[in-house]
Image (cartoon, rainbow over all chains, first blue to last red):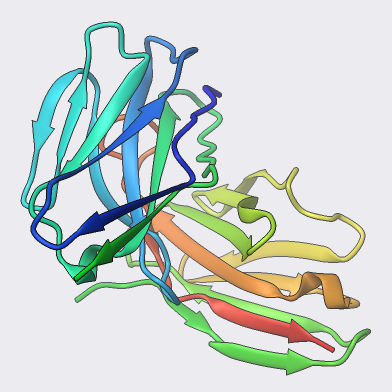
Length: 111
Length: 116
């Protein structure tokens, strides 16, 4: 499975746009890039998934360059409630079905 | 509002005791995952099932942990005997599909285990 690397932590202020970049240099053709969010004392929650270019939903945008070796999760105008851990995962279309979480990025939004 | 239900939410036990955690996946979901989360190790995959069959439990200490799905509405994770190092939050997640595109896991609220 492709290994992912993302910053351990980030700080931001309310109202700012936050971009979290994830590196996945050995991503394979069949792999999809998925992001989860985890609030304290809760289980992770799916945010967004993409394969290439740009994906947007009501929560975030995901930018994936042509080589797919990295991806950037963009959170527009964050609020205090966006303080959480954000996980970047590479999900491979195969029979194994494993889904491995890395260390994630702890985002702290300040007033 | 469909959700994954885990019991118990909190469990305090003494070393050597048996602990059983239960999970009710979302109706219709065909995959179930068990994860363990600690500050030091983060989220670790312990085991997962597809259509009730165990696919991989390589992340689980075999000598004391066991995971089963007696039926499609119940998954169990058992620790016997428990040890202080097993103290963690145990998450169950369910989903549809095998992997890759459109796979979204839904997590329960977790079972916080403390072994004294």
